Length: 603
Image 1 (cartoon, one colour):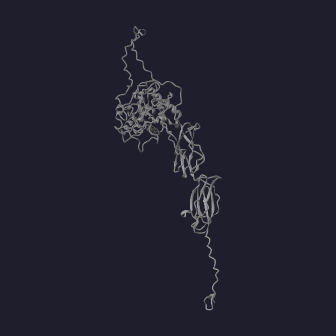
Image 2: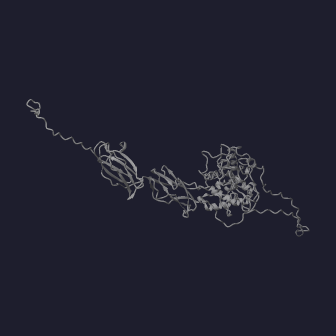
Image 3: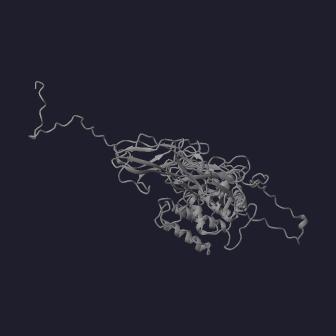
């Protein structure tokens, strides 16, 4: 029935209701305590939508959502419910319950290793077996060599966007032989980009080979445990499976095999496992049409032959005279292939997986003035669950906010690797010309943890003192221009203060407010903001005296408290002197009232 049922569960040819019915039947017949996995009532194989369990953000998919086997396990359980699995060196039994020796050893070794390094994950090897069955039919029925490497590469279809995801080449064809696009590789079907992060050397041969069942099983276990998942919790278990392949039908199928193997399984020789037939794309590995029967038939037990009549020991020719019939020599049984025994070597676990938390190391406020470097940089320590530092962790620092602060070289992001003390310090920060607050976020690359944040502030450059550099008193007559130049120096704690914004105001005599009349800069402007040069100096433009005589104040202020006042005097113009009176004597009037005429010389 299982093969018939499986053939009805191909992608695009069945609905989620059929999957749910099959799972329900499985639960009713052999697993009364099983909780059925969620079903996809929309039918088919699709990405997870609203309201469904989705993989963690940024995790993507280990397989690139490649095709997989959809055949469900048989409805008869390999062992009676409630009884522990039978453990014998090699036994026969329900063919689907048999797992090839090397493959089974790889799953169990991965569980033992990860339980020692990440006990909170609670990884069961049966979950690896369920995924391995669905992804590759347990490495094509256990067709592996003595070291656990598949006899030929297991490759998924080209991920070129035609019916599958579109993933450009990430490994230069090193694992999948394709320099244009990626393909899922090996018995656990990792895409090369995911293998680059999670690949392991679990059999200690010096290579991280996705086609080796020991390496692949260890990597799959670590991937499923990522993001601090506890696989004993149903929600985390679903998320882990969906992070492998984002499909509800995939989740249902893996969960069916997982529960099936939990109720019993046994070891069979390598190469004799049963390969499922139906795949979600109706195609086989390497995109070839699948055969209609398993590649290698399951071993069968020959029917016993009728036994020869036994002689009666009470009659002549008793036991001592009984001649046994000749027995047909039996063909030698191939011993199970087991991997060579090697010294126990701790598995290679990506440093990022070990990180339990990032701790802030740098203390004190992160502040700087515009255009200057920050004296401190954000620093974190990567620690494991026991508080021990972790070396070799990639930490990504990112600047967010509205200021124009940048790391060295003008970048807004930087990745730093932790040293022997587990510390990672961001590159030096340099403020731009924008003031305000911003945030620096520190995250572990390849780990879905909350970011550790640092708040930083950029303020204006400051000067605690302003002083005029030399010069005569400033005075001018109305309507004229002040002829004296005005130059002011800004200092901070006695040092020159370049880049400081100085506000210049022509104020009234009291210096309390901007003057409404009198002196001004060009176009009647009486307030300016000037920036000190590299020597901390500013030079004021020409000042017009205006038309109203009187006393005024040139007031200068700067951030940081620096200030000074310079007096301006506008005088009235000097009056022009009148011409002196004439010295010619006035004529003397005559008795008749008219001036007397001068006596004629002739008289």
